[in-house]
Length: 71
Image (cartoon, rainbow, N blue to C red):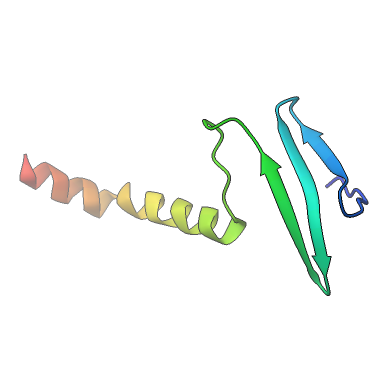
C-alpha cells in the first residue's frame, strides 16, 4: 500500500483522470472530494463489499436453479 501525506486543499491524481482532493479535516475525519469520469464508479468500501456479497449470492447455484425453473 502506498501511503501519502496531504494537507487540506492538496490533491493526488490516479490514472491521469481521477483527482482526489482533501477538502476538510475535522478531528479524526477527513472529507475527500473526487473528480472522476462519469463511467468510473466510486463507492465507499463498505458499500462496495456489500455489492460484491450480493452479486456472489445472486450467482449462487441455488439462484441459478431457481432461474432455470422459471424458464
